[in-house]
Amino acid sequence: MFKAASMLTVSLVALGLVAAASAQTTSGEKSRQAWAPPSGVVESHRLIGMKVRNTQGKDIGEIDQLIIDPADGKVSHIVVGQGGMLGLGEHKVVLDWSDLKLQADPGHRSRWVAMVDQTKLDAAPRYEARREGAPAASPATTPSGPRKP
Image 1 (spheres, one colour):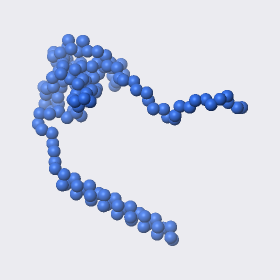
Image 2 (cartoon, rainbow, N blue to C red):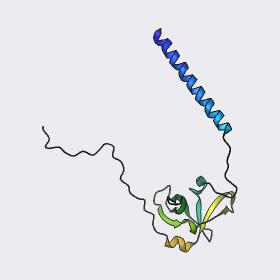
Image 3 (tube, one colour):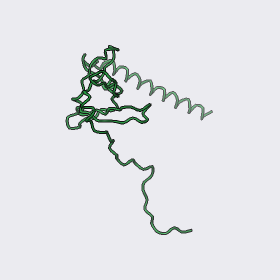
Image 4 (spheres, one colour):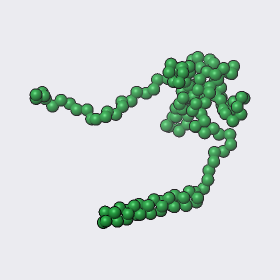
């Protein structure tokens, strides 16, 4: 009986804490000033996966990544994935952000497309991800001496 009463008390206290936290979040959100991006800007989630076309209108790939310069916080380069199927066989090249021209997709006014000159694409270097050592699942150990059977 005591165990059931204790569990009920703990459950009610926990429920009260959750309700109080929820009320604080809700009231805090209502008092927070709203902000929306100004018209004419493109949000990052619309860039990743955006089709890239050459100036003749031929699809040449899509934006896989944005490379951001930490010194000024601006996009400096993009990685374009070309060819392949579902990521297999795809090769990636890097273009300067300034080489792209974003414009509304003529076939779908609600979407954007990135245009790039074919000569810039032909001269683009192959993208190679930086290889940083992956953390080990367990710390490395050094043998302390011969093993005993």
